[in-house]
Image 1 (cartoon, one colour):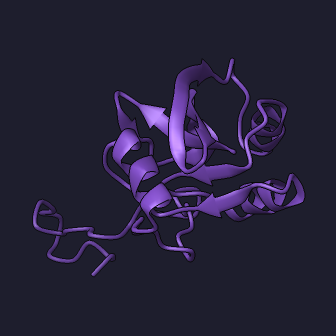
Image 2: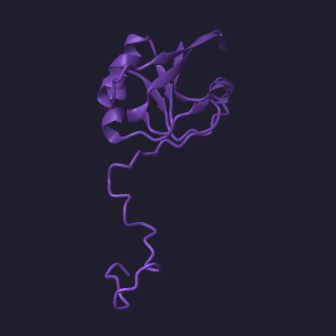
Length: 133
């Protein structure tokens, strides 16, 4: 079994499609026997599923992930555990122990208009109304 984790500075990276590195763990008899950090070499979004498949990965732990990437991973036969944060090594240990906290409904929605939320008119001084309130 090979488990990949979206990886940045020891942590689970939160944007699958922008992952520059994965940490890939080889597991035998329920124990990690080796791990290595691999660079994606600029692959993005849908291409990452093929990249992981070529690495022999069958399981992915990640933070946020979009619908297209989910579909590509499913087609590649890769089991997905999204919505995970914290140290990558701990996430893998938790998965192997059956205690990993993940959210199967996590979707990376940063492409869809995150601007506008939390808008404050406190700084506007042009006639009283800014049109956003």
